[in-house]
Length: 200
Image 1: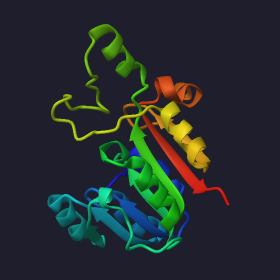
Image 2: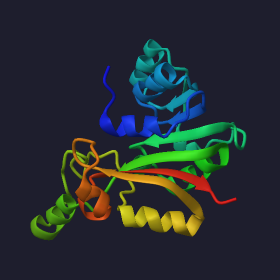
Image 3: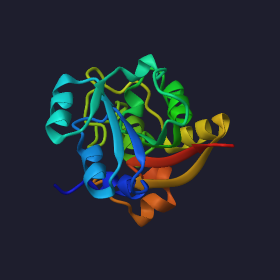
Image 4: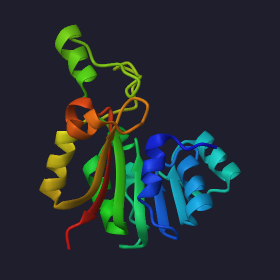
């Protein structure tokens, strides 16, 4: 199965043979790909029972867990990478989970929808309504998203917490990198991807 473009970009950031923890791993697509193509070992954490069933069918080791409860059962530096794709905005305490990611992983990789994208701004400025886009398809009353942020918001958090940004990318609605999204990520990127590390 062909991997979505943004997930393929993340896969390229993972060194072969690494030990990986995938938070909010969904149906296990990314971890299954990493196991098959890059020889990684590791686990996924997921809360949805249907997704857990899909993970098991793919041969992905998965643990049912609520990320907002923290990750105390995992040792510091127990993984080479801790990944969390498109889940940051659905957490009650995203800053705490990021801290935990960089405690238990030597590197963290995170992606999230960018509320600073021009379509979101237009929805609010012209329509006076919460945005509904391909990256944010839910109405305000039934969205799983709790803490939306922009690229600039996330960068400020990284600076405040002392996270070192190793790599970053912005993608369009088709999950592809473009020149515009690279030059003006906060305005033209629909989703953002970051590879992070604690400062020594």
